[in-house]
Amino acid sequence: MRSVLAAAVLIIFPWVDAAQLKAGVSAAGEWEHVCFSLAAFEEPDFIDALINNFAHFTDESSRMSIHLNSLTEYDPKQLKKWDGAKDGRVVLTEQRVPVRWFKGSIFYAHLLNARRMEEMWPGYCKYYVMQASNMMWVRQGVEAQVRRQKYAQLIDQPDTLKENWEQPMTRDMYNEGRHKLGWGQPEGAFYPMKLVRDFDVYMKSWMQTNGYNESYLVDMKLYAEAFWFQHYALNLADPQPPKEFDYESTLPICWRHIITDQGHDSVPMDELEKVMEGKDKWANYYAVKRVNRWLGHPTTKYIVSLSK
Image (tube, rainbow, N blue to C red):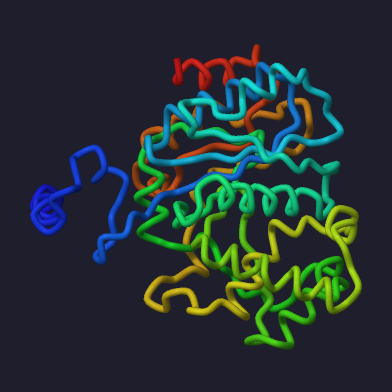
C-alpha cells in the first residue's frame, strides 16, 4: 500500500523525487517538515554527541535549533562550528538566557528556538518537537509518527499543579478558552508549528497588556514545558486538535525512565533495547531519557556509538 501511495504522489506531483518523498508530503502537496528544539548546557563533547544523534536518527529534511544556556561559557570557535552544522540542518539560537531547573526559563529557551526556526527557515517547519538534553533518539521514523498524530499528549487534568494555577497567564488561557487544564510529558512533546506561532503571538500580547517582560518567563517557578503548550492547545487552539485522535491516552514518543536516586541516573539497557525494537507497547517510543551525561557511561557510550 505504501508503494502505491508513493507512486500516486509522484504522478500527481512529478517534481517530487524519492528522497523528498521520505520527508513527508500532505494531500495538498505541502511539505510537512519536522523541526526539533533542543535546550542544552553541557560540555562540547556532549553537545557534539547530541548533534550527531539527531543527524543520524532523523530525516535529512528535519532541522534543529539549539539554545545553549547563557550560564555555560563556550569558545566562540566552538559556537561557530555548531551554528550551521550538518550541512545547515542545525543552527544555534542567538538569544541566550540563563536556564535553571524547574523555572520557566526552560520553556522560554524552547520558545526562542521556535523563533529561530522561523527566522532561519521561514514557513519550512510544519511540526515542532521538544528535546531535553538528557534525551537521545535510538530509532528512526519519528517524523512519520509526528505527522500521523500532529500532537503529543494532551491531557485535561481534573486539577493542576499549584505553581501552574498561580500563574496569571495560565488562568487567563483557562478563562478565555474551553476551561481545560492541560498537561503532557514535555520530553518529546510535539505540536503543529502553527500552534507554537499562535501561542507566541498570544503570549507577547498578554505580556504587553499586563506589563510583563521576558524576565517573567525566565524567573517564574514553573516547569511550563509540561503545561503551557498543552494548555493553550486544549483551550485556545484554532483549529482545535483533531477529535478523531485520543490525545488523553496516547503514549509519548520518548520513553522516560524514572529514577529513585541519582546513583543510577541512566535508562537501563533492557529498556533501551525494547525502545530500539519498537514492538508491542514500545512501538510509540523513538527516544529515551534519562541518558547519563557522562560519555563514559556504558549506556551512553552505546547510544553514541549508534551514530558513528
